[in-house]
Length: 193
Image (cartoon, rainbow, N blue to C red; front, side):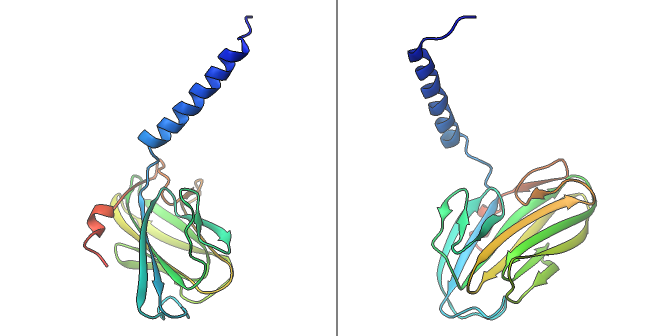
């Protein structure tokens, strides 16, 4: 077995790092979750009680997952600068490949509302520490509009949404599987809100 000289090993490492960097730049991850972060001019009491919106920013993410902490954070962008009294509206289009009973699990600190095709599936509109809510729904094959609204009042925050088909393994919303795929709705949203 021939051992490579040190300079060839160094060149190989540089090549791999350049390749990974270019791959990330030219073939970015599938960002199918369109998120709008809204900041009202007053404290948020619950999901339906807040003042006039004074700031709005939009993002596209690959997964609907913001870890528990003191400031809104996503692995795609890092810290987003929001700590308290803000809302998130997350939208995507799901394509159900296999019909059946689906279970969405929403881990949130504070409240949320989950809708499919504008129909409420489940919600928790008040403040709470990080807790899980299980939302069951029977889905037919085909495309569905997914919308989640979330609010953060004060203190710690966090949001993670996963799905699974009955007793199968779970996936984060935004992660394609053999049961469901996700498509960005960004272009259709330009006329919304």
